[in-house]
Length: 256
Image (cartoon, rainbow, N blue to C red; front, top):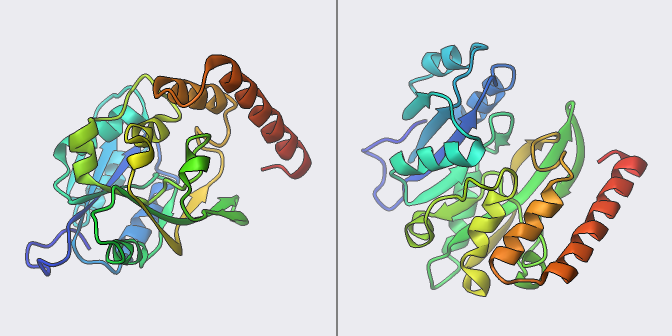
């Protein structure tokens, strides 16, 4: 159900932003997951990169649940997300991949986490199930620790909630990043980032995306940490290389 102006005013508006490009094969499942959301005060924004495979037709067919959409060439996922942020009206921002699924109670569960804290949170995330060809590979997501996060993205991003005020304070995504712009964005607050963790599965994520199938993620992660003075070039390079070795070994041994 899309955003309803008659919804309970005590429920904050959540903006779900999806970037698409030739995603007609996957988008129907994402649409179904949006339709099944139990929370009744959200808007869905789709930023398409100029698809030619039927994606735009799918969007048009479901304008009853799409609050805003745009189709034009873009410069990558973070450029698309920035376009979405500029039109988002929500108090909280959520990013859903075109080939990922949001769980029906995800938004309600994540927002309930905020009620446990006396101060406003910047970022609330949960657990994510990773799938490949319909098979569950593993579940990721664990309670927040800055000591881990400053070394690597030790959180889950799909369907997490970002306080809209965070983007007002720290700006848009840095489009010079192609893979880890979401990590760099959250590093801007440093150790003062206010985070909540909800121990529920909030999304199903398909393996093979730009971040989990590309070794360049390690160098981009290093660049994000160097940008925010969280390491030095020598130590950071050693850690990046060691992380890449472990990643390649795991892919060789177990395939994920």
